[in-house]
Image (spheres, rainbow, N blue to C red):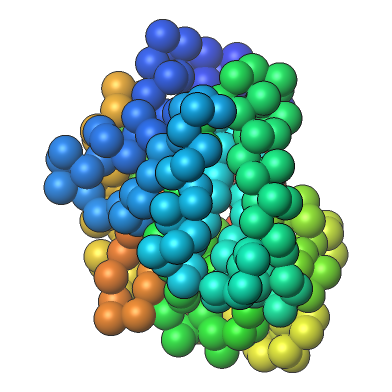
Length: 273
């Protein structure tokens, strides 16, 4: 990690440019203005006087996602799957009262998920995965991370939800990471909590040798998104949704090193440092 920070991030990413990717609201504006597809924004809540926006979204939308604008690692993300009297229903079927949702937004504003810095709550449309991902595990949203180095894709992994991760694709919470061959879009390796796998721990679906559909569009979108910020080394998180559409969730100036374990290859060798 120290070598990555010194040889890659310090060398190719200037700290003054970090706010462009550390704030999801800013990032979405940059990408959208450049014609890069991003999830539809329902509301941005920047202070307690704007909590009424949350009520408006709950009345208008059956499904939505709440994210801390400056959060990382999937912390603070809240999913609403359906309306319910006095609140919403979560993807797992749990009833969540409206006051609990407001409390969650308040915690985001206080900075509970962004190193205790005041934050904004971003409310977005809820996306659903392409059928390709549902075959591995039908619950939650799988995503794709592409490392783009000096304008070219360098490394890639898929992140699949599991029962242990409670439907999130976060590897630290028990999601499965799959290495993907950039040239073919085929999965080459898989890991979960540091253990190599050949099949999904819940569905028992074989993980290796599957080709991601619309792969050329995935790589094109990742490359286009990375070019919108002045960072030489950037992680692009994307989702593939029904109809073959590719959307960018966020950019990261300090993408984690779990991708090395998923792809079974060292970052230094891939970047030719």
